[in-house]
Picture 1 (cartoon, rainbow, N blue to C red):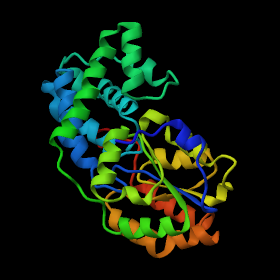
Picture 2 (cartoon, helix red, strand yellow):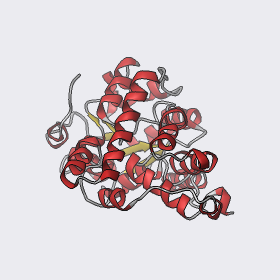
Picture 3 (cartoon, helix red, strand yellow):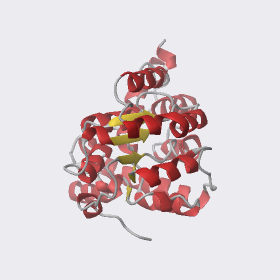
Picture 4 (cartoon, one colour):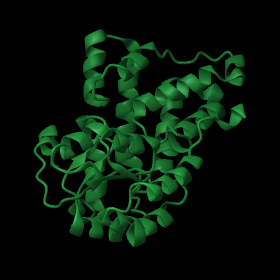
Length: 296
């Protein structure tokens, strides 16, 4: 497998005037629900022995990872948010179940390190913290479970046609918080790797860092577009002054068809930013609430 490094981003050579960053899970591939519900969440329950609150754990984890403004973020801050919601849920507290310790996880999430297995393993070794060791075991188990047991899930309809258009007119890379190995495997086995130049996974930093490394001093900000299905994708775009095209959760095919038929053309002609982007963002925001349903 080809391994991508930060140098691939820092030394990126433009071929076009425009640049498109593309998220992967839940954006290009319909993998979010399967990965979360069949792989991530059962392993949270098993790793932290939370069988007694399985319904609430699943509800909190699905809200954070699939149905809220936290959707699509790195697995470690997402896990911290799930645990925080459980601590704040009277029904859960009333069960007397011992909830996970979060201090070490919070410190790691706030460390400024690239959040991924490599740095987590180093931190667990450096500190000797048993909670970080448990976190390492959980994260490695997820990768293995997905690699061994998850079936092949194709891209959404209209993705391939869209990426063909992008390739003809713009430079493009994958911008993701999924581990690189899983990304390369998915993009390669579905014949999509031919449309992008670099696969940037969680090992190379945050999404905004990916975009900055690849585009700074190479493209005008208005010539950079990020495509994604989560608030973190939009924040990454905003951090570098780029535009953002949302793939609306639950309406992915319609979003990709609109990108292919209308939005990409507007981006190339300079008509995307402003009123058009504001309208798309307003639609997107309505789909990703902040307050969980059990609090309403």
